[in-house]
Length: 85
Ligand SMILES: [Zn+2]
Image (cartoon, rainbow, N blue to C red; front, side, top):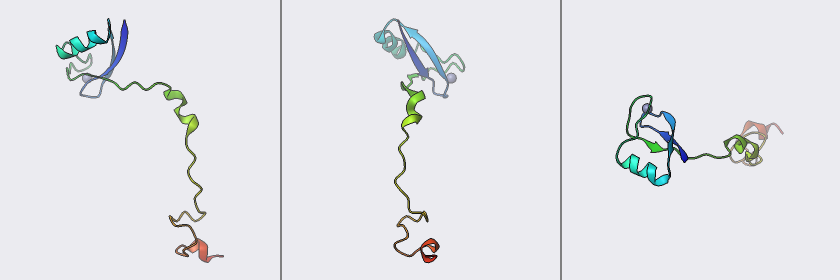
């Protein structure tokens, strides 16, 4: 048995058990899959997102920004921060 997370066209998410991936394909093609919430038959497999819980631990640190926050930094003298030196 294999469990798939499915999304309907209305944005509902639900889970369904299948004998195997071919079983899913057969039922999907036959439009036998329907959303239990709204009955929508525009059902598709949801994108699997493993390790979601750990995704925040490796957030990339932003590149060192100039203290004034200007895109070009203070070097151009375009910001008041540079003029205060
Ligand atoms: Zn639905």
